[in-house]
Amino acid sequence: MNDPQANQVRRFADTMLIVLFVGAISLPMLDMMFRFDSTPNAERRSLAPDPVFALNPQAMDALQKQIKDWTNDHFGLRNFMIRQHGLFKARLLGVSGSTKVIIGRTDPNATAPLAGQWLFLVALNTMNYHLHRWPMNDAQLEIWRKNLMLRRDWLAARGARYIFVIAPNAQTIYPEFLPVSVQRVANRTRADQLIEHIRKTTDIEVVDLRRPLLEAKLARPEERLFMRTDTHWNDLGCFRAYEYLIEKLRVHYPSIKPLRMDQFELVRTTTNGGDLAGMLGGRDIFLEDRIDLFPKPPLELRLSRDKSRENLLNATATDPDGVRLVMFRDSFAETMMGYLAEHFQTTCFKWTYNFHEDIILQEKPNLVITQMVERTLWYDITEEDWMLPAERKKAVRIGDFPDP
Figure (cartoon, rainbow, N blue to C red):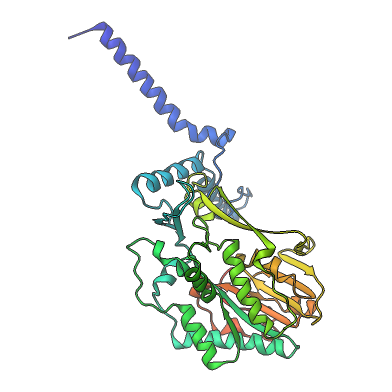
């Protein structure tokens, strides 16, 4: 039946459908031209740089890859679509939209409705580490031992003490908030193996920060020590770890007067989520119950950034023992540096796992600390990694992997 009015409506609907379709597929190109998408990049990496054009045959293959990488990273509405995909899977399906993050259980003690979701890092083999898959064999343990012994002996020859510090993963302290499907293959982790091996075969001082945090959790369960939406501990967890470390240091330097918890004000706020929430594209969806410590007057932490030296943080204080500290560390020591800097004549902090001979010779420390989060023990190191700088003409590495 030929109804002119119905045909007109159908033609209008078909036209609108075509317009909407063409508009939808044109939006990414328009965004690449005008950049109207303000969605922040949730990935913790640098995007591909602009291609470098060169008129020679050798550069053409490289140019093709550069164009492909740039297009993949800068495709129009890319950040918006990644965010919506991640939030759809997380909120409606209850699964992670990122291969780097796993969604855990909800904490019933959360102070805000959207601030109780636990997120855990999967990237960097963190979950494989927690499940204790592929433990270290005897050869791997021996290489680690040689590496640490080499550092200890090299420093001892220059009058410096060496201490190796291991910080915990969130999964280690709060395994009860992991998904039910996460079940360990065995109970002993690589950190357990390494610490036991070092203590049995050497006199190197190893400070295991997992122990004080587990004890603090059991003694004061109302004190949450890690952020729920971030890979790191919160200020409270960091301070409990500091208290334990400083007591170990006081065995050698008894004049140290530890900072006390009553010198700080504990402040609780609800904010946007941390780095794990960002990987899911939802910092404003997965909120964080923050726990921060702020020094009360007259306490003023002395740490200041030395702008002239990349990744180096320096501070000075009055110390009757004249102890000069150099600490090679990762992001877990970010807050702790301010506490430690109160106790030594000079402190120098470098964000690296490498053993920088040049810094040691310049700063002339009598105390050197290497701090690593336990998930980095997943990486294997080789015999070459523990040779002296003089033999390789470069810094000793604790592992054949990038700096944190």
